[in-house]
Amino acid sequence: MLEPLPAFPDAYFVEDVAVITPEVAVVTRPGAPERRGEEQPMAPVLAHHRSLASIEAPGTLDGGDVLIVERTVFVGLSNRTNEEGAAQLERALSPHGYKICTVPVDGGLHLKSSVNTLGGRQLLLSESLAGRPELRSYPAIVVDSDEEYASNTLWINGSLLTPRGFPKTLRKLRQLGLSIVELDTSELRKMDGGLTCMSLRF
Figure 1 (tube, rainbow, N blue to C red):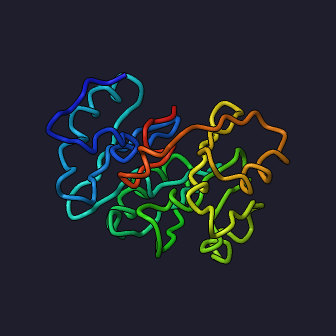
Figure 2 (tube, rainbow, N blue to C red):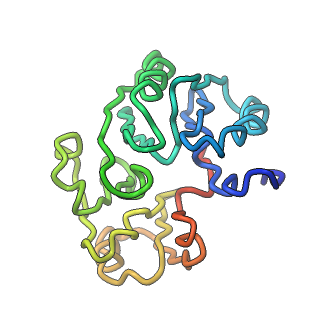
Figure 3 (tube, rainbow, N blue to C red):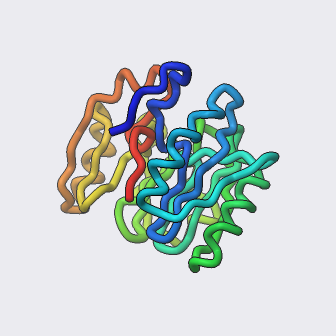
């Protein structure tokens, strides 16, 4: 649990200020100018757990645009993350055996608004990303277009946290045989937030 940052109302979405792997934590440079500064109090906290690297100007990178699947790191190129940010992330992670793969983000705020891992190589993704060549080799459950928000489902410790109110997606997820917890995300949606946004997973 972290102290509040009253000057940064979006700091609630803590995922955007860091990318964490078992080897290193990369402190980001948020793409929205009004969010720059959120990452500074996070760095000393992360330094207790990992060695640090940082994204520097002119690079921008939001953690919501970074999806790690095994040793592949998908980086969404969006309004918040640019190619320089992706390149700096690659320089930080490639010495540890990670491969960077960029994916254009045409809809939604971040890459993980539309695709997330369900554990291992299995993906949950929106119809808009289902045909992307970067993701084609991965087994995937495709979310119907009218339930696209449910693409932001969080796999953690062998269980799935999924937004409540998306019955078609829930039926598909139940086929995996995993523990599923439905959560009310109605307040988060008012700020374009989802379940992955509110934590950093180690």
